[in-house]
Image (cartoon, rainbow, N blue to C red; front, side, top):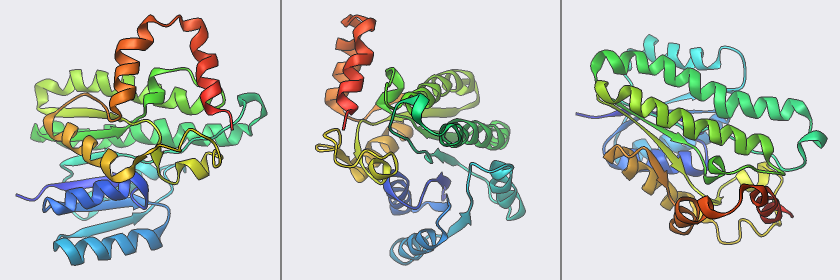
Amino acid sequence: MKKLALITGASSGIGKELARIHASKNGELILVARRIEELEKLKLELESQFKVKVWVIEQDLTVKNAAANVYNFTKKNNLEIDYLFNNAGFGGHGFFVDRPITKDLEMIDLNVSALVELSHLFLQNMKIRKAGKILNTASTAGFLPGPLQATYFATKAFVVSFSEALAHELKPHNISVTALCPGPVKTEFEKTAGMTGGNLFEKAASAKSTAEKGYRAMEKGKVICISDPVLNILIQYIMPFIPKVIIPGMVQKMQTI
C-alpha cells in the first residue's frame, strides 16, 4: 500500500531530497512551500521518474491560518497523511539585539509554531488510525546555546525537546516521532541566514546524505538522529564534560564570519 507523505519546505535542500527518497519507495507526496515554480518542477520530476501521484500547495507557513489551510487541502481532497515531514525552517546571523525583531518572530512562527500546529492537526487522524510517522528537521544547534544565532538555536532546542516528548506520548498509539539533527548542510540555509563566506559550511554534508539518514531513522522509529558522526560523538560524549560557562564562547567563535 502506498504511503502518503506531506513535506514542508519541499522546494529545496533536505525537503526536496526527502521527497525524492519517498517517491523512490513508491510513496505519494504533498509538497508544501512558498515557491510554486520549484514545487511544480519537482512534481513533474517525481511523477515522470517514479510514476507516483504528487500534489503541491503554495503556502507561506508564517502567515495566519497557514497550517489550517494545508490541513483543509488534505481534507477537501480526502487525503490521509501517513508521514508528516516538518522540514520548513530558516535561520539568521547576527547579535540578537541588532537584528530586526520581525525576522526573529517570523523564524519562531515557521520553525516552532507551524511545526506544532501541523503536528497537532495531522496527529488527530494518525491517532484514530493508530499509525503514522513524523520527522521533524531539527539541528545539532538544538543541543547548544547559539550566540550570533540565538533565536535559531533556541527554536531547534524546542524542536528536539518537543519531538522527544511527543515520541513518548505517542508510543502507545503506534506513532513514531523522529528529530533529524544535522550539523552544517549544503542548502540555501547558508545564504538565507547571511552566513555566506564563513568557515562553518566549508565541509558541510550534502542535503541528499542528510535526508537519507533522517529517512532511515524515521523508518526505524528512532527518536533522535544526529546525522553527522563527529558531531554525534562531540554532543553525546564530550560536551557533557565541558564547563557550560565556556560553551557559548566556543559556539560564537565557530559562527564568526
